[in-house]
Amino acid sequence: MNGVIIQFFHWYHEGNLWNEFTKKLDDLKNLGFTAVWLPPATKCVLGQEGRGYDIYDLYDLGEFNQKGGIPTRYGTKDEYLSAIKKAHEAGISVYADIVLNHRMGGDESETVTVHQVNEENRNETIGEPFTAKAYTKFLFPGRDRKYSDFIWDYTCFSGIDSIQKDQEEIKGIFKIHNEYGTEWNPAVSHQFGNYDYLMGADVEYRNPYVVTEMKNWIKWYLETTHVDGLRLDALKHLSVDFLQEWITYIKTELKPDCYILGEFWKQESEKISDFSDKINDMISCFDAPLHYNFFRASKDGRNYDLSQILKGSFLEKKPVLSVSFVENHDTQKLQSLESAVKDWFKPLAYAIILLSEEAYPCVFYPDLFGAEYTDTKDGEEIKVIMPKVEILPKLLEARKQFAYGEQISYFDHPNCIAWVRKGNNEYPGCIVILSNGENGYKDIELGKENADSVYRDFTGQRKDEIKTDENGKARFVVSSQSVSVWIKV
Image (cartoon, rainbow, N blue to C red; front, side, top):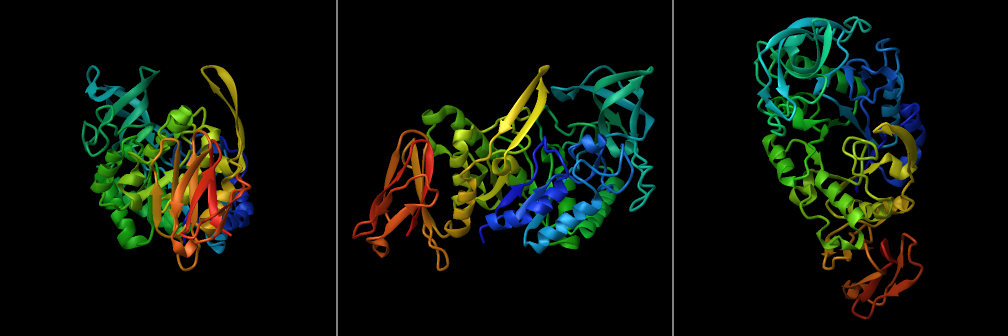
């Protein structure tokens, strides 16, 4: 089976997502999607305005009256559980987005000892430690200890970005002194000296009570939701030691077949690979380096060497653990990692991740359905229109019907590349050809078993037909800045 994921949300999505997903399930199934990545279902500090990453209470999936109401941005717990159940009935696996790094919106303040650090080098302290008030106590009064009576206090956190000193609020990054240390956890990314801290109240995974609570929570979550896998957010900031223990617990005691996909956002595939090695290849990772190749290729046009499009990608490094994508909620316009792939190149990028032999592709919601949104940047209100990629359903259909078997690549020209999928006993295979410049072509030998055969472009980009000679050889063509998928008639 040619598995393919859809990221069924984007940062600016409006409306009840769980119900919308349920309504679109038949269409998604018909397009060949086998899995869906849904956004975090947990209650946020911003209530219905939160996207799921400003996390408050992991046990509140839109069930309790907390942070301004019962539903989350995406709907209620019942609607979430119903969406998962309907997805399973349609044969689609569900990957839940999980935020482990931080908490926001503490219910009470505590007196803590903190030490401010340099935001550009978190190992460098500023001044002396001092006492201050910080909102590090989480009581979840709306839930009233249902599902868990664990109380989060300052011993559960390693750092925070807002304190109160002499009745004045001070912003910055402050290391919290507690019984588990006065320094950051070293088992994290070394970006900015130490990248333990990201935002909010940073969870202290050297606290064994926190680790136990997070094991109890994931057991509850898996038993409650019956999701098939997890997408783990912000792994650069999490302790590798904790991740090893926690994921091993999931795989050995809870759900051995749980698919785990991580966001370890690095542009260098070697660093993603090193992280993967440290956790014994227990999780797959998003291929951020390949995304940046697409981004650069879309900006550079015909000046980009298309034969190098996979160079330095995680797909090239560890294909079995790589999840390829063109764009996501962090890279879309006006977001923190903005690196939106230009519209003209998206058909080429999707052809690469959907029709290549080793890729496990993830399709972004706006590329399938389109999106419009408005946000403010540098004081200016900006409207963004993301048109859907018109050829995408055809490429998905091509993946479902033809993209099988051994791949033979022709990455031998800077502006025109191609590959052959040889097919198998059940599926016939195809020839994929891309150009980022002028009209292009490839002379390809398909063997005598394909002698005197006629091929047409499944995408409809080309209306002509191509016939192989008595040896099964033909010149396959592609239009300027386009993709064609040639199939045997």
